Length: 283
Image 1: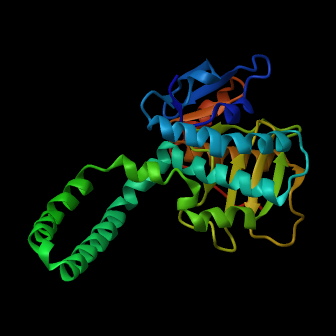
Image 2: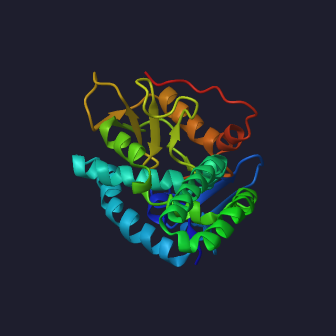
């Protein structure tokens, strides 16, 4: 069994109601559809080291699964539950392929900062330890080559480190501070999810007054998080079909390769093969 970039318990919330161990998989950019056992999808054999897999399973997924269960059963959640699920969502944002892409985009800045700090420490060590000056200067001369190598060959260790939500304290603090509302699909189409399920307008970020986050919890429930203070927190609200379709457009638009759904439906194929997306704020 490989390492799951999308946890199995999460995907079980979108399973085929007539075959609970299976889910429908849609490939973005093609008309390929297939039904698969949940345990066999969204995983890769060598995605990360075993200790990372154990950390994610024991420290992130295990505490969050009961919270997901509460929400799927439309039960009240506590502030502690929000904090647990927030860590889960931050971890989800980082562990998927899109998270790796983001990390590669910002890696050059991180590497610049790391090597600048390293150079300062070496210069300070030379000043404090004159007897080691020759050896430390040799290390200093090699830094540009080492820095260039890291920039040309992205070190996955940087990504592994950022799979711990605590490495991103600002984002980890944002999620539970927002106003959470759970949209439910009673009569409209079920919610879908993807290999990049946490949606926000990337050009806008998460901390602005108009920012929104949507995160599908199951085929019937999606989290909508905003900074609005005029609505009741943590309520379950049945939504009209227009809102459900907007959420599904968001999730499909942000998918990297795969969309997951509880049934076979032609409209999903048409949706994920769009060339352009018109996404709207939810009011």
